[in-house]
Length: 366
Image 1 (cartoon, rainbow, N blue to C red):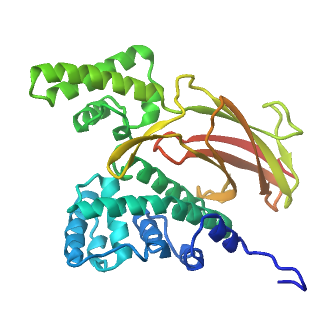
Image 2 (cartoon, helix red, strand yellow):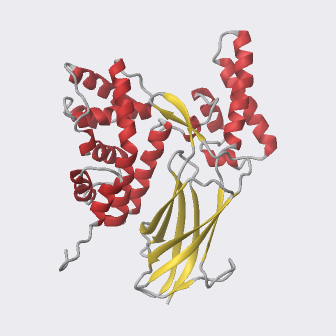
Image 3 (cartoon, rainbow, N blue to C red):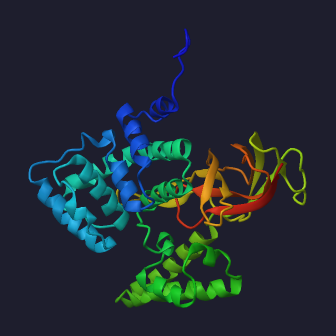
């Protein structure tokens, strides 16, 4: 408040934009300053949001929560869950999210409806936390981990699991066979030559055949899994990023910015995979759904002290990319010291692990 003018705070804007309680955004701001990068710690922070205050914990459900916590702890190899207050709605919200990401069966049908309720609330809670972490702290590690959690929830897949599990037709046996051939992530598949891809498709099909005892069913499943797998790989999103400014139109021109000033870069996004689809297969409440992924653009600065840490300079949610080409402008405050620095642009997907794009460029700070 200044004289007769009233202006809102950025926390108030975030609470209004995402329809969140004021205590939720305040809690995020205070606790993000002390939180570490660990995924579990950030999931605990999200589940403590006031939006989960009314999640029902019915009679004797604390015992079911304790059993579910034991199953999750064995899956993710963590004992931190067993110290939770099992009668708390926030603890239950955390357990339901983790059970969804670990793809574990739920004890009773009421938990299925409760999971749907939590997953409906979580995206806006998570997006608000990302905005606060980027605006208030500028911590690149926290922001990237929160974005990884968004992908986890979309895919129903915990971070320690293989990215390959997101593809149709892939099972545990085929993942082991792919790892034996040095294919451990989605980028490995996207860079495979067509001749070797046919070999990989046969390998995935055979692994599904071996898991089916019926001869007729195994033949049918082999064809279906091979087709589903090849389609999933072809539809993986892939883009090329180009960074420029209005003064440097060509890629060869080295960008220059005045120190300690508000500057702007132009980022061109070009689809490099003509077969990629605008929708991806996601999991929600144990069901497969199709959803067009959205994207964030992050602009960061490599720490010149040699620690490898990234300083977040700017962030913009570009949403869904419907066309093959798109241009986005990002504003940032340049460093106060003159010299040559490394700017890094990351294009981060909110719905799939392993498909993020990155581009770095050296710029001159005058």
